[in-house]
Amino acid sequence: MANAVNFKIDGLKATVEGKEILKGVNLEIKGGEVHAVMGPNGTGKSTLASALMGHPKYEVTDGKVTLDGEDVLEMEVDERARAGLFLAMQYPSEISGVTNSDFLRSAINARREEGNEISLIKFIRQMESKMKELEMNPEFAHRYLNEGFSGGEKKRNEILQMMLLDPRLVILDEVDSGLDIDALRIVADGVNSMRSEERGFLIITHYQRLLSYIKPDFVHVMMQGRIVKSGGPELAERLESEGYDWVKEELGIVDETVGQEA
Image (spheres, rainbow, N blue to C red):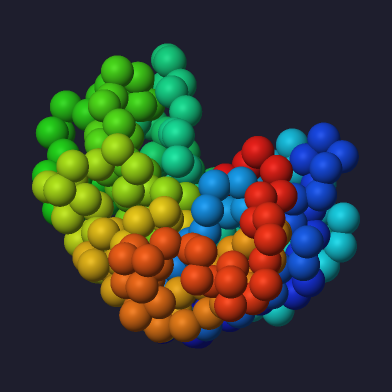
């Protein structure tokens, strides 16, 4: 059995086109924990996800990020993925000419040592099993990656990738966006099936409804490029019913927007 994961963000600052968006984010995620980050538009939530994964648009100017003691910021994007970071994107890309199954198998093998690639038969069995759990049409395995997929189908496909790649730290960036109730339940069931001491979750969301299906251990409010308040699941419920004004009043925040990124 793998060791319990430990992921730590310490004083992370990042800019986009010279504008500082993240202004000192601190967060620690331990094995088995689900952390939800909520906040108004423009406070840096999606910037946080992209900066952690090494998107070239986002320049980290200060701070430290470690996964199981390893310096994440020193890793290239592919190295972060191999180390166990996974991002389910808000808007998954379409890739013509590459089938879903070919992409998934290549992604799995990229994380394995040379000579230890997954066999085709084992891969097909695993993929078919996970697709069945997610109630995905088997035909989607042979279609080009996300091409012609609906929003809900793309999100299920992201969860399929997560289940097959077996990451250490999962970042879900508004994975509930555009999902109907049935799709939301299926996606949440896929996430819940992956909860273990060997894995941590960072869920970025605007809405409490996702957190009714994936119960978080901790909820954090992000404003002005920082995490300004933390609590349990009850914090998300209060935000849903009362909005963010009470947080701003409590903390004396005048303007929570730091940029155009969510």
